Image (tube, rainbow, N blue to C red; front, side, top):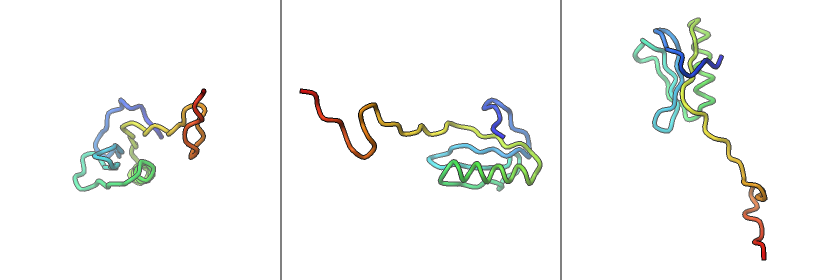
Length: 85
């Protein structure tokens, strides 16, 4: 479940959010029930599992990093197109 970004967390809910270049999954209201991950995907998977285990909501906060897209005329790994005369 990907709930609305504005949804409020309640005790027992699981929240996944970015923090200082990493991703954290934590259980609201339970100190010590947080885990740090290097990728968003790992944190979301762990958060989903925790929420399922506790029978609570999984709230995902923060931005998804933008997908890298090459500008028109540039092929991935090939550099810039030749300059026009």
